[in-house]
Length: 140
Image (tube, rainbow, N blue to C red; front, side, top):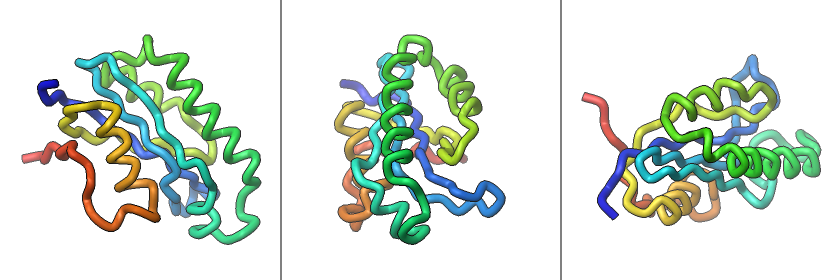
C-alpha cells in the first residue's frame, strides 16, 4: 500500500480534569483515504494504577468504558470518514476519558501501524524503543 496520511488520537484516563494529569490507555487511528478507523485499548488497568495509585479507579467501570469506546468507533466507522468527522467525534467526549487532538502520521499498513503506535505510546511494558513504521508528519 502506498503511504497515506492518517491521524491518531491517544485515549487517556484523566481522573481530575482541572489537573490535566492523564495516563495513556488506548489509541485511535483514522486513515480517511483508506476508509479506516479503529481503536485499540489496553487490556489491563495497570497503567492507571501505576499513575494514580491503587483504588484510584473502579477497574470494572474503566474496562467497560474502554470496551464501549471501541464498540462506538466500530459502530460509527461509516460516519467517521474524514478528519472533520473524527474531530467532531473527539469533541463530543466529555468524561474521565480524554481523546487528544489528532496528530498526523504517514501510514503504510493501518492495522500494523495501529498496533505499532499502541506498543510505543500506550503499552508501557514494551515501549523502550521506537517500533512503529508510521512516520510523524512534521510541521514546517
